[in-house]
Image (cartoon, rainbow, N blue to C red; front, side, top):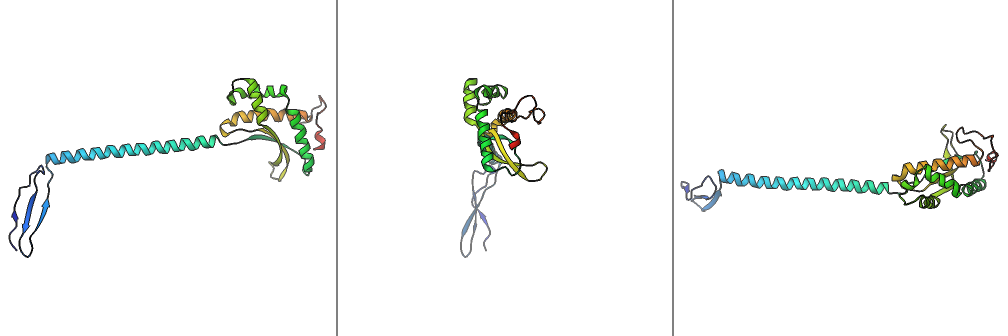
Length: 214
């Protein structure tokens, strides 16, 4: 094998390429490059540029993730989530009688004078984001419901029939829906001769609906 011959000078700045030539059965050439001061500066500049790109990419991903979470949160808050208060009934009340009670209660509750007090007490003008209390009244009349359902006894003794009185709305309206539903159920108790403050039969006036039947 012949001695290696250096055919070019390698500069520290990396501006020239040295060639080592091996003689023998077949000549071949390899190249090598050494980084000098200017080469290091260029390398560092490239690294800084790529680090900047990587940082921007990370920020973009974080913004994208945050926007996705915000969008999902808004989607969840905008989903339908009606709120109601159950009026438990006696166990074994026939379905026909449950429906009749629900019908009577809804008919009595859909009284404009009473619903106006619900609008004011529950602050539905602000809660429904409408321009006037009259508009809030119409919105309440559109959203309120009285439906037959069931109630899970807190003692764990099973379920009993119930009449559910509440208001349709979304998750973000939870507080105002709860306030409106509470006003409605209190009036339903009064209609059935039950004192809303004590939960006992009221002796001051005859009930509009007979609670003993249910």
